[in-house]
Image 1 (cartoon, rainbow, N blue to C red):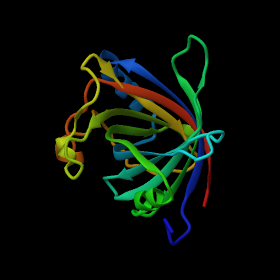
Image 2 (image 1 turned 60 degrees about the horizontal axis):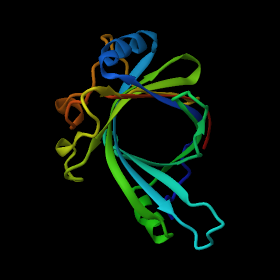
Image 3 (image 1 turned 135 degrees about the vertical axis):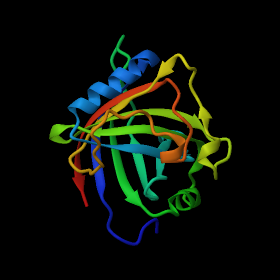
Image 4 (image 1 turned 30 degrees about the vertical axis):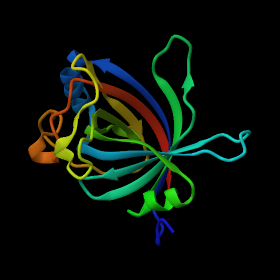
Length: 206
């Protein structure tokens, strides 16, 4: 089994988009001003896919998230994006559950295959009414055992931020407007000038 005890599970509706690099500092400042709490994000992301032998059945994709700050693991299933014509942001539903650290091995035994992995770094802000906003940037892992080896995956001209709405979460607070976590505080290199934005509303079960 991937886990031997009951874990927290969350279903969310997420909207994701992107902003230019020049807007990241003012975006961080404004979102921080509206947030009650915020915490750093440092996730090792692994994408897996299972292709059924019956070609009439759709392939299943899962994302495994390893939080390198508190050493927790979760698995996320994302629906196909609902794209509105001529509008960039993507709308999708997500189901995320906490799991144990052997989840990747369990999924591989079930027929899933490895697709790709990367490091996700940034900040997560808790808004009111269970809304969360994440300002994050992706990094390529040169050495999977060393987060400091990560290098930016996007050109310097781009920036990423994301927002999510959830009914349950806790994070640390700070009095000053944050910047991307530094290598000294989050064991990862400084974030590139790139950002994605997502917003979601979710219900939690345990």
